[in-house]
Image (cartoon, rainbow, N blue to C red; front, side):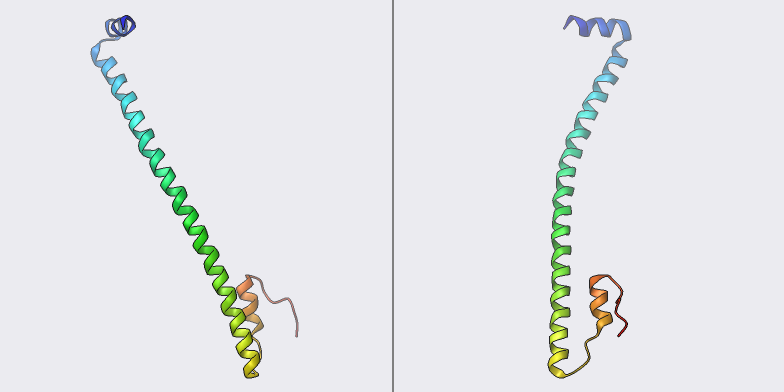
Length: 93
C-alpha cells in the first residue's frame, strides 16, 4: 500500500487515477472480446457444418437427376455433373 501512496505523491492523483481506469477498461474489453470470440467460433463451426450439408444435398440431387435421366432414356447432362464437382468436363465425347 505504501508503494501506491508513493506513486500518488510522485505522479499526482489524476495521473494515477487515469492509469487505474485505463487498466480497468482494458480488463473489461478483454472480458467482452473473450466472450465474442467464443461465439464467433461456434457460429463458424455451424456455418461449416451447413456448407457440408449443402454440398452433400447437391451431390444427392445430381445423382437423382442422373438416375431419372437414365430411366427416361434422356442423355445425362455431363456439364451439370462437372459443375457440381466444381471442375470442367475433361472428356471430349
